Structures are given as C-alpha cells and as structure tokens.
Amino acid sequence: MIKTKLKDKLKEMLDKKQAILATNFYNFETLKGILIAAQQEKQPIILQLTRSSIEYMGLQNAYNMAKNGLEFYNIEGWIHLDHGDSYELAEQCINIGFDSVMFDGSELDFEQNIEITAKVVKNAQKLDVNVEAELGYVAKLGQSSDKVAFTEPEDAKIFVENTGVNALAVAVGSAHGFYKQEPKLDYDRISAIRQITNTPLVLHGGSGIPAESVRKAVYNGICKVNVATETKNIFMQTLQNILKNNNEIDLRKVFPQAIDAVSNLIKTKFKILK
Ligand code: 13P
Image 1 (cartoon, rainbow, N blue to C red):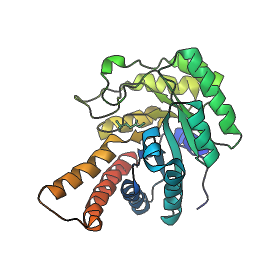
Image 2: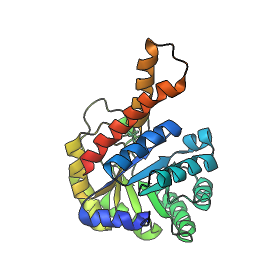
Image 3: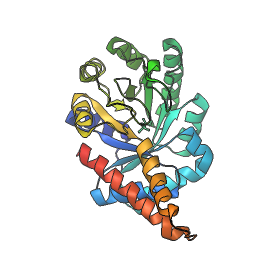
Image 4: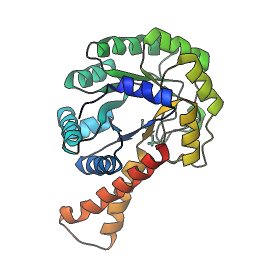
C-alpha cells in the first residue's frame, strides 16, 4: 500500500474537517484486534506505543509487529510514539523507522518545552517523520483534573512558530483514563487554536468522550483522536469474564474472544469519525 506521510494526511484531515483514529496497542492480541477492525472498516489507523509498552515488548519487536501487521492486513497506517518523555526516546524511535513521534514536554516550562520540541523536530525532519507535541496540560492517568492547564491560543501560535511541529496536542477539557463525569470540551478554544495556528490538533483522553462531543471537536479542528484506556480495558475485562467460570488453559481458545472485543470497540470508534 502506498502510504501518505502522516503530516500530509493530517493536513488533509484539517482541510476536510475530519480526524484519524489513533489507538495504543499493548501486545500481539490488542494489535491484531485493532488491525482487523481497520481492515474490515477500510479505515486508516495510527498505532501508538508508549514508553511502558516499548519496555514491555521491546522497541524493535514492537515496531516490527506493527509494521508487519500493517502490511499483512494491507492497511493504511502509521506507527507513532505516544507521550515520548525524552529527546533520546524520540530519536531511537525515529531511527528505527517510526512514522511519527510525540514529544510531551507539557510538564516543562514553556521555553524548555519549545527548546526540546524544536530539537526533536529538527532531527525528525531529516527522515521526514511527523512530530506531535503537547501544550497546556491534559491530566495523565489517575491524576486529578486540578492539574489541567487549558491551552491558550496565543501561546499555541508562538509554540508552533518556534518549534515547527506538525501536530499539536491541546488541553481543551479532556483527560486520560475513564471520566467520573461527562467531559465538557471547549469547542471555541479548539476553533481559536485551529485558526491561529492552522495546525492539525490532537485530542488526548478519547476514551469515554461521547460520540457527539468527539464529532464537534473534529469539526472545530481536531484531526487525531487518541484512545487507549478503552482498548486496554475491553481486552482485560473480556478475559476476566471468560476466566471467571472457566479453567481453559489453551490461550488460543480464550484470546480470540478478547481480540474480537477489541475489534468491535475500534469499529465503534471508526463509526464516530466516519
Ligand atoms: P485515554 O487512555 O483516555 O483513551 O487517552 C489516550 C491518549 O490520549 C493516549 O495518548
């Protein structure tokens, strides 16, 4: 399959007011579930790896699994580092062949975030790799929403101009993990950031955001929607339910049901973005 560069694909999404689904995978089975959904729905997909998943599977192994999987299922897809926490990790992923890396400097001060993001961009450009960065602060898994700092459009403009990032993760009312109450996204803020930066925006914390809110966010400038917690959760919940009253030790009989559950979840996410 001839693959468009992710930065070009995201720009195309921006023009069309559409978004690509990005979901994390954790092992062969979650990856397989995601790929089957993408193949059956004929949808493009961004496959994401965090540092913990990379440490769990091994960088080369995780990358090979995703790359082979995209080829095997003949899917338009990209491999992306999610929440890269250092220049070095981003560099390793760029060198191994990732299509895209995120440098997450959201816990740094503004100038430091700009400085390291710009360095990552400079390095990534040599291999035409897409770079996403985060400005503002989206609460991480288990953190209280008090930590949230919404992205200011003026800051976003300065940030994009000084770093050259291809995509910007914005804090606009979402948070990582399950929500205790329905999130209220700030659509005006998304639209203002989109207008002032003309850059594809990324919505983190996609798990549990109602379909209508996601669609409205996309209409206003979100071009990539990240879902992780729901993918991990449906896989484990399905296994736990099966094994509650079952002593089956042949994992090849048990795992397919969890893989199907992942596929079904991802299909519902594709439908939201269609
Ligand atoms: P959720 O785990 O809340 O779906 O967030 C995913 C994400 O934003 C990954 O970067």
